[in-house]
Image (tube, rainbow, N blue to C red; front, side, top):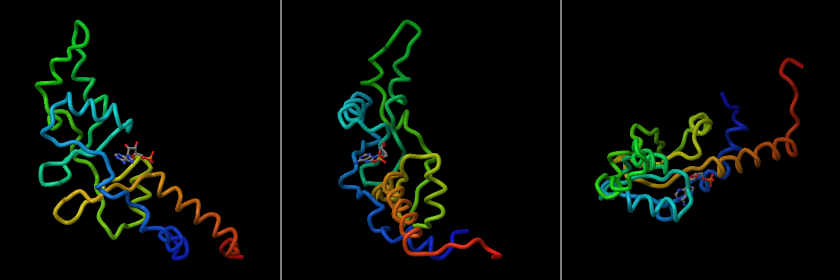
Length: 156
Ligand code: AMP
């Protein structure tokens, strides 16, 4: 369990955790793989959110999810790019978080992921919390603890 001081320092920049939806690249679940391949290649991010036409979060898409479909026995088959859609290949059952964040849960989930998807009660996509933004808060916390607090081991 986090101490109250650690929790307070970690959440001091909490309002900066989230990159809002309007600046997060995404694809629609109904987009074909050709479109998705172009988007992923152009933006240079490894994985991006997939939304439906109402802005609800549906899953995540990465380049290997697309290129795996193109691997045939005789080489690369690009025809699947026009016939398959994002919903056919995306990762489903993705862990999401809601504001206000449980900072312990955010830290635990970010051990295995580069970013977390933030949704509202109706599963509308609100933005992402990246490991990078949270690491800035961890950095702030460890420096502030060292500069402004004296730490003594328990029992001394
Ligand atoms: P970062 O910690 O900034 O390197 O971001 C971690 C991951 O979050 C990236 O590899 C992307 O998968 C995702 N990401 C970060 N920023 C964006 C963005 N503006 N649009 C889409 N995905 C993003």
